[in-house]
Image (cartoon, rainbow over all chains, first blue to last red):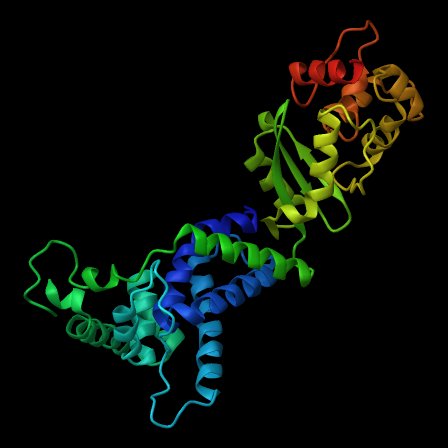
Length: 160
Length: 208
């Protein structure tokens, strides 16, 4: 068994990893995190065991790169009266939904991570817990609390 | 959990469905950015693109050293890339920039405006006697042909006619390394990695 061309990895998992980065960081920082993720992955790729779960491997890298982004953002000076949350700026006409990002930004980082890794990337909670720390039960709770909060704060969710 | 949800799917689907699917333009932009960054950091071991030509779509692949593979469609481009991943490196991206010169010279060749290729070549996919044979093929001039026996002799092993044929059949750089100019001693065209029709087309192009 040998490794596929990295191009196939990008084509197969690029969209899902972007979705995860967007949910954790918001639309603006997501693309930087995606780029860092795939560059790191490409560097390490020849040493990956061919039978590895490539998506879980990529989400693990994306988790670390997103944390780097998130911490860098928090260290950046922010006006004292504004919470240091994921910024929502310049909503572009395409796929930006300011209300959705505002609703996601209002969650805790751990809630966004648990939702992104479990519900978007399909990672079991034991794996999510390995990334975000704490127990699988705590990760499950974080995701559930986050979803619950989204359903009350995000209009489209509340309408249903 | 929300008990007012009456639809079938899991109750979180509605809010999560709002996280947009990655649109093609975003992925395309990110892919381009990745290829540029990988190239700058020396991680792009193999870059490739395809090129439409009169003999079909050709896969062009290059290492940092030079053009390493030209493949006909009938060789199955995906299978060729998988073998490159195994034999050279899996750090492979569709990244046309490195192949600009190769694509331009190919276009000129098929437009009858170029007789010889002036490109750095990476012969790492050919070894031993096969490689010796391939290195000598450019000596067969544009529009000319040589027999497998003559090629074997030129490579230093006059009896290795069959091996010379194998070298041509497994040429990793067809068109650029002109194995299509090697024909049978009786004058018939012989086999070709791109198919006999492609071989005839190249010989006709060069004879025109």
